[in-house]
Length: 222
Ligand code: 13P
Image (tube, rainbow, N blue to C red):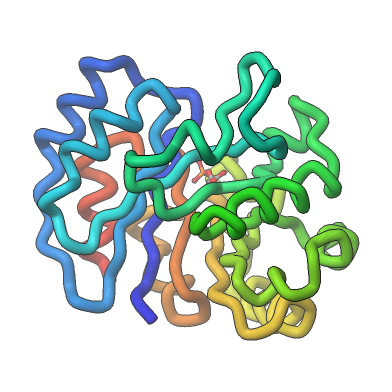
């Protein structure tokens, strides 16, 4: 399987900044690399258009409604994404669990919404609730997830997790979810990315994906 490099821009960037980032994004990918860009919703269509002729580059949403289409004001559901070519949905990011009070059940419902509509969920977890989260996901869907291990203490802090510890959790995740691709996220940078690529299937990158030059450097360090 390809190594995934997921750029999670979170709630950053203006329309003009997104245009500039996309115009400046010129990296030659190896066959075994897949780049995934997760912009804020208003820029999905622009990014979709810019990447349509770029092999190896895919589109993700940063969140997904746990409901189907209907009267859920402010939510973005799978049906709203039809035709945009969204391949992945990040679900259960710790920032959403923390600030938006997303429950494990909400996240499990998002996994069902995604997989029942052809989108692969990237389920973010920390070690202490990994099993509780997995238990709520329908058992036949578990092994179709991509799982991202994002230890809270490593997110946005510059304190990337020790590689040995990540390797141990990757093993535990595979015991619980099955043979799923596992990503690491938390202060990944061009200087440390190589360490994580040796023991995972890719990286989920926040801060270091905002600057296109830094992100390109990170991809090239592979
Ligand atoms: P940072 O790379 O900024 O630590 O963010 C990690 C993250 O939360 C990606 O989803």
